[in-house]
Image (cartoon, rainbow, N blue to C red; front, side, top):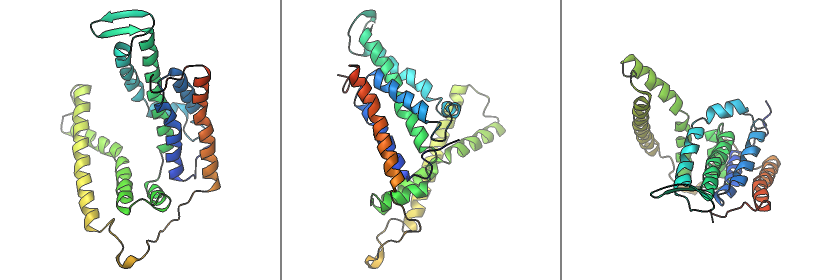
Length: 256
């Protein structure tokens, strides 16, 4: 499967996420969200992730998305024809449009993040943050450690599931089981984070280099011509939903 973003700098991927998602946060209209979502579905296979795999990875979003639209549907600003009214809840043409826009926007913002950030190497990301953005070493090392810990969540979940099943604790409702597992995973993550922070502090990570010497790097990180071309193409694609939304008179800046 082709992958147009293979080999680009991790910082370029972060820039692509900002370029694609930021315009969607400036408006609440369904046209720009729908166009952006369509662009994501078209380019996801070209970025190394098939549509079937993308849908499997993002299935929780398709549950969260309708939930996010319910509040807009019932409590958004009234406008147009009224279909239903009860106490503070009112369903009108405007609330239906805003609910649809909100549901599409959740998918349009989250799916590009999954496509672009799914296989970022934490070490390469740390090199880019330190060498290109010149961020403090303490922040960079903490970010690298945090990203590495995220990759362990799936393994931790499977290990906890097997351990609870061996102890006979898995025979309960799915909701109660999920909540219990999530709480256990949170406790495990906090404990691991505390131990990792203590270990890194004891080893002097993030402290100034004595003698005023310059820090050296095992791997050089820089933006190449390919990175700039990818960012330029992303800027054009990110402007497409805005242009179409404005041309169709659907643009609603910050929901106004």
